Amino acid sequence: MPIANVVGSVAAYASTPMAWVCAVVSAVAVQLGDQVASTTPFILTQALYFGTVYLLVDSIGVLVGMNVRTQRERLSAVEERSARLALAREQTALLAASTERSRIAREMHDVVAHSLAVMITMADGAAAAVDRAGAARCGAAGFPRRESVVIVVSGEPEAEDWRAGP
Image (cartoon, one colour):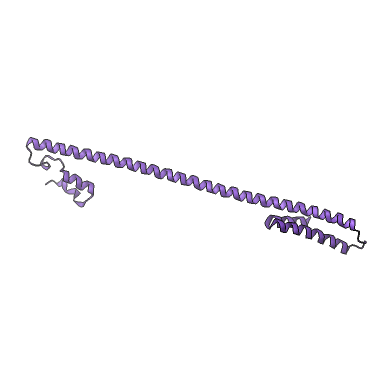
């Protein structure tokens, strides 16, 4: 039996043809060793019988070793596929989050731009109403001038000046 274990290990961790060669060589070597060590005369049928038995036992070892290798390769393939699927799920989640952030940023940009356009329009309308009422300048009535609103939006350092007045 120990030889069957060795042949099975060869089948599991080396190539299958090498395992079959080892099985045949070990069966022949064991049979020759028995004949050399024995004091009885050589009987061909007995040698063939025991050689066949040894070869069958070694064949079981080879088949078990092949099964172990196949299972190990299958497990490796399943683990690799699982890792690829996990990576694909993670990438899908990241892509969905990025898409949602882009959508929210577009909506915020639209809301801010619309609010700013409304403020400018209302300030222009108020300035026109004050001009019609006879005021000399829009700044005297406390309404922001259009240039000041543009400065605030552009982020220039002069943005604070419109609050101080003319």
